[in-house]
Amino acid sequence: MLIQRLAIIGIGLIGGSLARALKRAGACAEVVGCGRNTRNLQQAIDLGVIDCYETNPASAVKNADMVVVAVPLGTMAKTFATIHDALSPQAIITDVGSAKATVVSDAQQYLGQHFSRFVPAHPIAGTEKSGVAASFAELFEKHRVILTPLPETESQAVDIVSTMWQKTGAEVVKMSVENHDEVLAATSHLPHLLAYNLVDTLAKMDNQTEIFKFAAGGFRDFSRIASSDPQMWHDICFANKDAILSVLEYFNIHLTQLTKAIQQGDSQHIKNIFTHAKTVRDKVCG
Ligand code: NAP
Image (cartoon, rainbow, N blue to C red; front, side, top):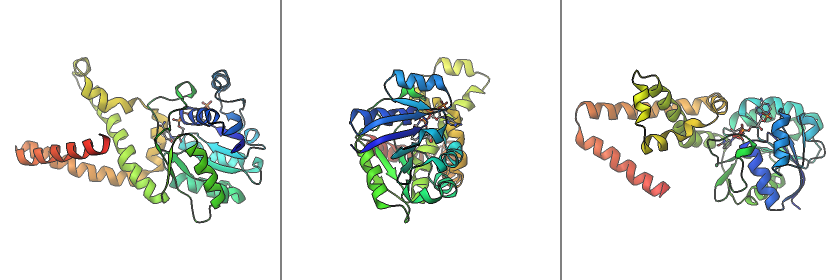
């Protein structure tokens, strides 16, 4: 058995889906869930996602050989500080946070002697839904999980966390923390900000009732991710501020160029942008 006692702090979409996937794979003997809300935790037991629960993270990690921190980014530091004294000496600790530099810095500050067994991780899978009821065992299948180990991270801990994610059906890749945060700012954080901003902007227009009455497939496709958890994305804006600002600046330059092309009736420029975008999108997502 890969994991004897798995403690997951934060039994929501990601924590719950990981628990389900590892149980299905027979990769862990026992799953202890941890959260603040006992109704959610009881629901997680009723759904068969976890075996038992604790509301205090320190109690949850006692005797755990694997600890997965799956709470919002703004709560990571407090969680690391709370579990520090209760961790077993050999426990492996990992997280699922959507930005990595702040999590690594929080872990370095609060995990003390356990930091060398902390393996930063980010599953590139999710939906716009939150909570344990939205979790499902197949979420990570054929998706990538990025590990961003540091030079001091114990290789055995990296190997075990890699194997854990492979058991969910995911493909594991490694990256530096900086590269992760830059790439994810572009591929994930920017699209979410644009979707939120689009819906918010349209909803503030005088004729918004009519606008939404006629919103069809295009609007739905583009705006789906604006239904994601606002707190989670609020935390990401702070956690990955520099990379997000830099990609937003780049995007604004290109949006201004498109605006100018439309103003000036620059047909070739507009066609070039759309054709290039279609070719790339068809290749990447096709
Ligand atoms: P979620 O469904 O809202 O689950 C978050 C869990 O954390 C809940 O079980 C909640 O339980 C607990 N929690 C929330 N606030 C807390 C707080 N202040 N203190 C302690 N526990 C708290 O969120 P999620 O989508 O699984 O996201 C969890 C992590 O995964 C985040 O760090 C996010 O960046 C990362 N992630 C998300 C996605 C995605 O698409 N959703 C993808 C990849 C990575 P209680 O309310 O019972 O405390």
